[in-house]
Image (cartoon, rainbow, N blue to C red; front, side, top):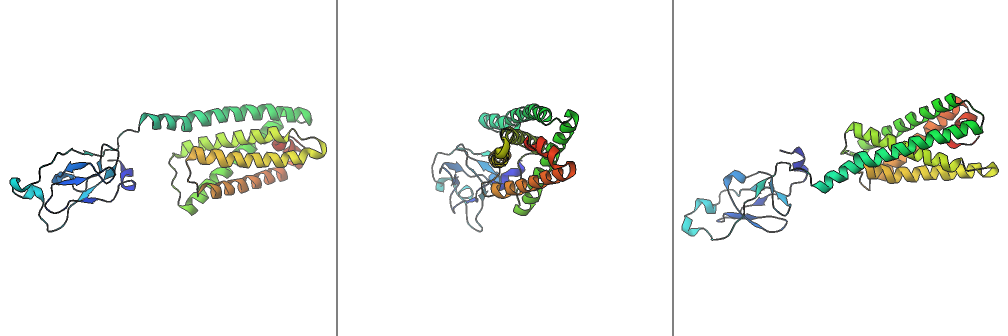
Length: 259
C-alpha cells in the first residue's frame, strides 16, 4: 500500500445503525458495506479517498434478517493501492524534473563559458584562471543554496518531494542559469554605470531564484520566500568570500564582468 495514503485520506465514514451501505464523502455515491472494507483505504470512482469504520454496539444491516434490509443499488469501491500517476502528471514530472532544468543548465553553462571568455579577453586575464574561479563560484553558490534548503527545510519542517539527486540537479541548473543571466546584464555596464548594472544583475538573479526554485522544487507559497531569502544571503556571503580570496579585480571580472 502506498505509504503516502495516510496524509491524504479523509475522515472515515461511519456505517449508520441498521444500514448496509455508506457514501463517498466527496460525491455521495452509495456503496455496499462489507466487513472486509473496515479501516481499508478506499477510493471512489470520482477520485475521493476515504476509509470506513464501524459504530460500536449497534446492529448492522448485514447482521439483520435479509427481509429487513433496505433495497438499493450499490457500487463496489476499490481498495486504494497507490495507483499509477495520471499521464498528465507523469508528463509534468518529466518536464519539471528533467527537461526544464536540463534546458536551464545547458543555457546557463553555455552562457557562462561565453561570458567568462569575453571577460578574460576584456580585462586581459588568463582564461584558465578565470575558468577556475568561475567554476569555484558556481560550486560554492550551489552549495550555499543547498545549505539554505536544508537549514530552512528543518526550521520550517518542509518535506521535499524530490530525491536528493533531483534537488541537486535542479539547484545547479537554476544557479547556473541565474548566474549567467546576471553576468550578461552586469557586463553591459560601462564606466560610472557599471555598478548600476551590477545592482540590476543581482536583482535579476534574486528574482530568477524566487521564481524558478519554488516552481521546480514544488515549494509551498508560504515557505518559498524564507527559503529563497536564506539562499540569496548565503550566495552573497559566498561572493564576498571569493572576492576576498582572489581579489576584487578578478572576482569582479568573473562574477560581474566588471573591475
